[in-house]
Length: 195
Image (cartoon, rainbow, N blue to C red; front, top):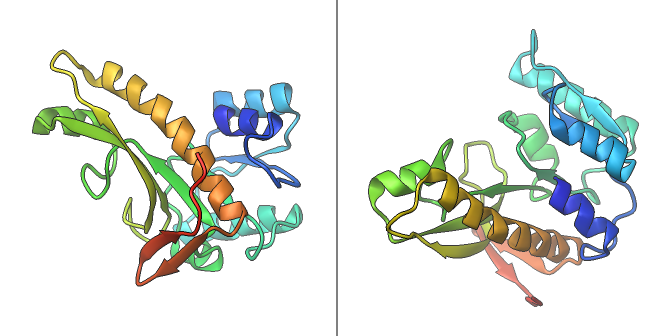
């Protein structure tokens, strides 16, 4: 989140008119960063006592109250450890992005770097994808490979992958904002890829 907000401030991500940070964790360090470093409005939606549909409804209410419309808004998940339900995913279809620290479809879910190391792969990496109704299965926008070193542990591999995550997430956001992404048969086509 910090890298995305910094990229917006530095105009590495363009055409952003307004921003909002929503967390399901009131203790998230990102809330302080958003508010105090970037002066971005923040909202917290607690999952406690809410069904998935109830959480989605609250999330949609908050987005609506800030006048974020599904047709011209982008939701970027960054450390948001709440699975979104079908109502918001359908409402914001192909407008919700997520970054995952593996080369999907391999190593979905939590601890992707550990899964990669345990599997003994020689190459790992990261994936920016659209969010759909299941975990880490939406159409893939961009991927970046990272070599797995013989002496890697989960932290070292995660740190190298994170560097690439920041690069491709910014690029994917720009591609979506500038209408460079087309989806056909669950496959992403990019009109022009500037790096």
